[in-house]
Image (cartoon, rainbow, N blue to C red; front, side, top):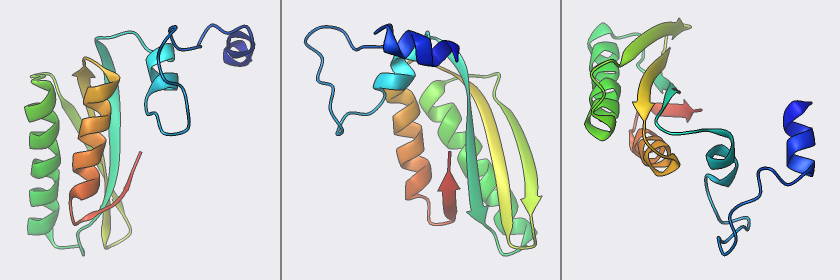
Length: 117
């Protein structure tokens, strides 16, 4: 309710002169978060139940987030989803919406990634 009221009052409107249309990314996230901030990236990947593929996928995700954020305090939680899939949650400190979008784009480019949110 609080966010709806603030949105109606214009609290989350972009700054004057900033493009605000359906092609822009991050305006809502930018309005609601202050940076630097902790952010959790959640990814589901297809690993076919092969432990070697699972470990490789997890390592690639953690390396990607670390290389982009430089955060030494990254935490990672892995949850199997059936036999063939893994859910990986990586929490890291981010500096901007652009950094979040960049990580999501690279996660999406991984062949094993089925979903990212």
